Structure formats: structure tokens, C-alpha cells
Length: 171
Image 1: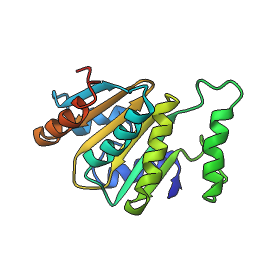
Image 2: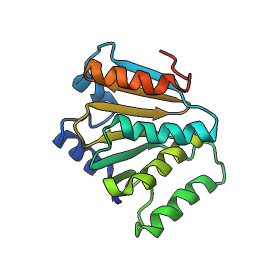
Image 3: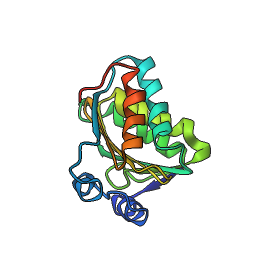
Image 4: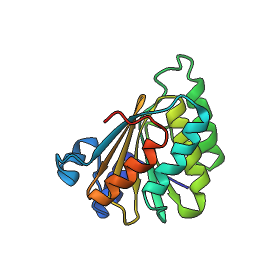
């Protein structure tokens, strides 16, 4: 895993034709109907399933990016941020989350990436998940919802198929 600044995340996303932030999604994906919004399940088992499904939807890429956009909103004492900071320090990262909120994972680190996504879902933080594979999908995790935007109908149907198995799709 490599930790990145927001600027490095934006550059990396632009290099592969992905939105570089949430406001850039419309310019890359358009205003089409190929979007699925779903409530994040409260069940830990379903969150684990969804974390794996999200990476399946991205086509099990060689590299993926989890870019934190919101964190530590519920913990007044900062204890939740201490958990993630401890994880980052164990990986050799000394910068604070606000200085380097991006986490770039190689394919061999899929279980770690899934664990980080579960952390985001469980604590209702915000993150942008990008794939450097072939499948054109953008995933925004924000508070209690997932927003998944697709460029093509095949990817959209695949998203609907996987997420409908949990019964959490909103629209």
C-alpha cells in the first residue's frame, strides 16, 4: 500500500481517465441514468460481502485507490482516527490523514483494501473508490450510502445484480 496526498490522488485519477473528485464525476460519466444508490447495510456480514463485491465490480484491478473524503465525524475523542492512524503508522506512514488521505493498493493487497472499505462503511466515513482496471465505475461512499456510477449498460447491470442480492438498492 502506498499513501498519497489529495493532489497525487487527483493526478493518478486523471491519468487513467477517472474523475479526480466528486464534482468531476459528471464530466466523466455524464448525467445518464446509469447510477445506483444503495443504503450501506448495518450488518457486519453484509458489509464484508459488499466490500468484496465492490472490488469485483471494479474488475479486480491491478491497482485501486481508496481516497478518504470525510472521517472522524462521530468520534469526539478521536479514538476512531487513532485506529486508522495506527494502521498507517504500521505501514510506515507518519503524515496525518488530512495531509495524505489516499491509499493505493496493489492486487495482492485486496484483503487490506476490503478491510479499509469495511472501516469506512462501519464508521460512516466518506471515501472515493477508483479502479485502475478496465471497468469504468466510480464509487462514492458517503455517510450511510453508496453511489455507483457506470459508463456502460453492461457494468450497470452487473452492479444491479450484485447489490440486489442484499436488498439494499434505493434507486
